[in-house]
Image 1: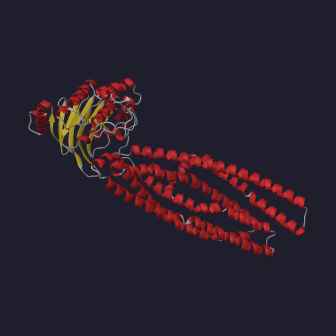
Image 2: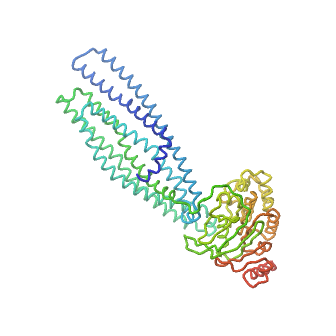
Length: 585
């Protein structure tokens, strides 16, 4: 239960629901005990009449009165039980809501390395399936545990008052019950953990298939993936069946032990009645009713135990990443503004997950209002430079300095709000085109959205759609072509008029004419703004104030376009190659 201790503050937070539920449960159980008491009294009265021949009318009056009180107390107990469920189950929904928000916030705070090491399906499973199981612990498991403890306490107390000896005999099966609960619960915990891990693997596999369905169809490997899915599903079914088989032992075991208690009551109670140790046959009736009042609480022990064990396994998986401290921390909570002076001072970066040295002693400087172009082969470290400026990573050594301040000392939220970034892999949400653009400025007007789209040279394409700016995109923007997605991403980045604009090879999917239009628009609208362009095209870099060439994490050339085309090296070779390709077209 140590993993579930994480939830204790939530019980304190919703103490009114929790304590109110406990109080209502106690009152409800007291009212429920009137039934066996009144039935026992009625049977005793009938027995007394049969022996002594007392007044029939008085007996009838007593029975009618008892029936009336049984009906009243049963209704009251039912209403209180309903209120108990409303109190405790509603509390569990509040806890579920809070816990999902905590998990989601942690997802947002965790860094790139975390997402490199964890699969999306597994993360989805934790915020849905795992939290769902935790809610079942906070709600039904806690409710039935409280109900069982209170009912056992009150019922056994009443039984003891009536006959201590018969109570002792009746409760003899309970130690056996406790032993089996302990043994079976430990097995459920192990099998539940295994099942949850397998379910996460199945979710991850399914999510990847849906995301990559176009590739699967293009390579005609549907049957291969179907076989792999069936294999994972078969494993999941086996784990689920093993868990279900162990959990299924509880019900029959509970009923067997309750049945044994009933037999004990009838045999021992009957013997005591014959010997005169108990006054009337109504006592035996009371005990049978008391025992049967314990049937559901005892039977629910197995189910509740299973819920607790599953919740323990799920909460452990949740706690594993809730305890992770994000590598990127905001060390300054004072709001800041940035002008866009950027300096890399002997910066190196080694990725922890792969141990690859992405940058090696990089130094350069760019002033406010200037444009820097970064050219280099695939994997040379170009995108890493942009990630460091956005502080998605911190350098292994050296310093990234913004406006004279070390980036670690800057307000992280203010820094990122000052940056408009267009990633290499243009990601769009399953929402309207307008809302995707407004993602860069939530309170943007329609006029601002249209202006940003025009500057990104996507406005005319949007007007060609039936719903125009209200067109709903498919998952990850699948409705649009690669070039259209890139241009919508550019519109999203520039709509907020950021001080620093980072373009990570975001024109690779557009033709040279469209590229030229976009660059001209950006040049007009980013006067006084710092712009960094990563590209494989000389055409994207030629108008930049500075150009640096990256190779294997090092700067091998730097200068202006005119300087670099007149030097032997990668830039000149790339320039001549692309000129030749253009002439061939």
